[in-house]
Length: 116
Ligand code: 5GP
Ligand code: ZN
Image (cartoon, rainbow, N blue to C red):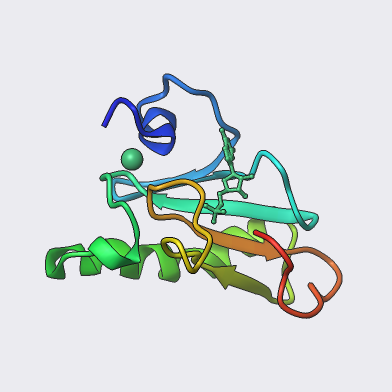
């Protein structure tokens, strides 16, 4: 999907500050961080949102969650973090390529974040 922003980050035509990568997922710093640690974890394969996930995508979703703690610790959030997946119109998803926010830092993130 050459017209998809996050697919272009995967293929390298748009730069990003990558913090983790394997054969299934890529993690990079959010361009407008809401907390001291704000990482986006995305599937390398284009999946539009949680509403278009297929049964065979389970390994990808599992990898995204399974790597969250490691990425959070590595990025400076050793004592916990929050994950958020905004989905479609009601979830106010802005980029139509599935992504999981990891937000954290040294201090508690507070109540539900206002806008991610
Ligand atoms: P959403 O609202 O769709 O859940 O979150 C989209 C996120 O992508 C936002 O937090 C926004 O700051 C981030 N973002 C949008 N464009 C770019 C970009 O070009 N590079 C990076 N690193 N993050 C982006
Ligand atoms: Zn995409």
